Image 1 (cartoon, rainbow, N blue to C red):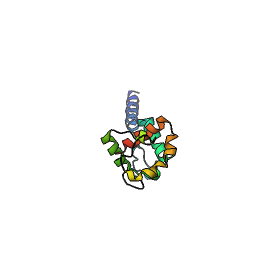
Image 2 (cartoon, helix red, strand yellow; image 1 turned 135 degrees about the vertical axis):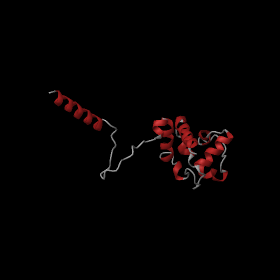
Image 3 (spheres, rainbow, N blue to C red; image 1 turned 90 degrees about the horizontal axis):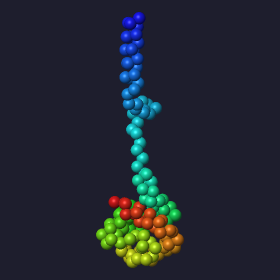
Image 4 (spheres, rainbow, N blue to C red; image 1 turned 90 degrees about the vertical axis):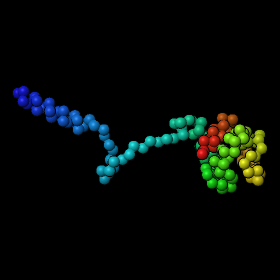
Length: 136
């Protein structure tokens, strides 16, 4: 009887050791699948996520501005750099309360968008500014 209990104990221990280890997810071919870590701006800061949403959607900013390439308007990185250097506010500019600092030759084109940005809440304009200043 003692022999059977010892064997059962060893068997139970073996099963525990093999089954209680770290589980790795595999794909259909048995290859390990890396855990996806979603780094969303929403998790980091809801205002930043809101700014990105406005920039890419309702604000229509993404039509003329890209992160690091000049399209119609200057690249966001260039805008953020100049506004940081001068300690200026993008939120004030898109509310038509400031002078164009980056590319004054595009000011007339940008003025058409002030209808959209001035209709936004102060929080929305601040969210846009926060998003743009986060682009590096």
